[in-house]
Image (cartoon, rainbow, N blue to C red; front, side):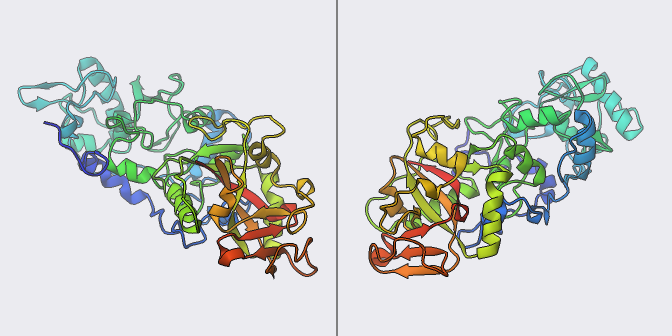
Length: 450
């Protein structure tokens, strides 16, 4: 009888025998709490801040050379250590609760067992290929009935071969993305793909859709996208581009490589899975900022990815003026952007949300008859911003600098000299209005869909 588990029905211990690589993953939660400066503009700026920690070694990919040469110069500097060599049971004995283990070579048939003895492959043909790799890695020629100590010499490769959708062909590990070339190898480390082309495909959702979308090693568990609790928890702090490494602290990506790959096709939106630490941050901020009325439920949250040219003017303004904060901007859409599976920006000139993502906010397009003149209006109260929305809202970053506080409408209709923003905390902030008068003072960060 199948057990029912209280925590999202994931099996509680299927991952236990594979958890010995957990020490290679740093704690990604430390900067993600709502009260921290998570997603300060440095999350997106083009400086070097996002490299000051784990993952800092994956500096920009070289523009020259073939796919493999490109990875040779960049993957070699990535902060990915080989799987530790430990004593573990043979593949046939791993994860007994899930049923038969699959042959690590063909990944089609189950491993062979006879008279109480378990073998690491399905038969002699696959055993030959298995032992070829074993001999190449250990300098020995193990028998078909390999012992657990023999398996332990393959730990840097074994779990990858067994679970990640690779094939062993002539003793080489082949990736199922292109099914043509062996995975890139440096020393004892086999990387996820053969080169940059397949890496981009993997990051964009390619690969074996039946496998866990975090480790790419084991089959998905039931209807879920991960194979078990360990990968589920890691996916909740994962890089928003590759989704198979932890994001770097308060930043959205695991390092500069994923940041640059994501920005290649900007502007765009990337959906944040419900349960991800970033989703929780956005949802909590929204709920805490709602001051009156019935609060709607959030259906989708997207990270807005922008180009370096889009972000640099804002970064320079922020560094010069200071006092950055989050504000909500209610807006409208004329398309289906943000609905389930809809991530392509439209080309309609009257679709406000898509045009903001393409050009950011433009003071030149502001209503000169606004309550405080022509400026870009936002609010610290999500309920206030919602009154200008038809189902979508932007969570923005705004540089306030020196604030000019007002107490009634039309007290000022332009930015007073010596100040950088105007704030009207109407009804003690429940209907807050925040106005900036420079294009460079505000940028959209998240799209929220109701």
